[in-house]
Image 1 (cartoon, rainbow, N blue to C red):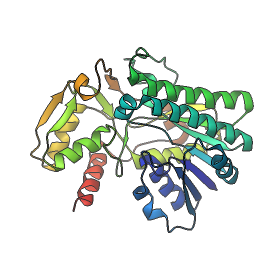
Image 2 (spheres, rainbow, N blue to C red; image 1 turned 45 degrees about the vertical axis):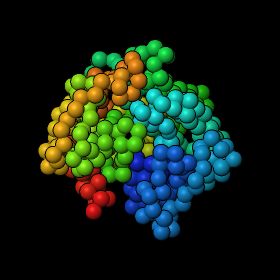
Image 3 (cartoon, rainbow, N blue to C red; image 1 turned 90 degrees about the vertical axis):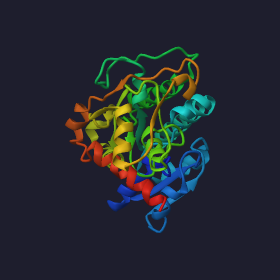
Length: 322
């Protein structure tokens, strides 16, 4: 099996590449390094089954060659992170929509199976939790750039599902819910690495809003294991799956737990959303997935507890600064 991973030098992509190589597969990665890093895949470059290209997925000539050579395509490349969405909305929309359009169109040219990474942002600010894959979406106005990411990924999903329905392209859509672990950075607003970095430096931990918004954090190794299982499951074709943990915690309690586990001297400070992002910023109050569907199809069961997941991030940052 030869797998192509777009965005493969990113956080999730590099862990997926690692897993597939451990299974004896050949892996090619393409990444423009806008949010990914060569450091994430440096330990893989000596493996003869590993190949990488530094290029954008909108380059159809390159994508044509890479997709024609692979057996299976994992499309993880995307512009992600709340800060990036707020401050570079053009980049986010163009990367996600135009990039995915190129990937899916070329994949159909060679009839290659596509596993497309989507996001819990799809559900918008709906308060009907836990979120099921066929639930309605509730979004804010187009004047709030916050929701452009959700819309761009929804277009990606519509496109992949349309290719499956109309042209028979085998596609699977995976909606990630707050995947965390080693190699993730807080550069674009990812909350766990940001908190851990602040705590280890004994800096003030900045919690946005009132801190009572809640999330469920899934270890990246649990996530990529289930992604790989879906890729091998014919029953998953043409379907959408939530992927994450259903162990819920508020962001304020997360900050307190980080302080406790790092034995930090950090204080916790609440920062209004308007100050952290932009005026009128809106957020999800709860982000909790219903994962019964993926459990049924590929027996998805997170092996890492919340504390074990958090400890792995702490250990990663400690190792990088010693």
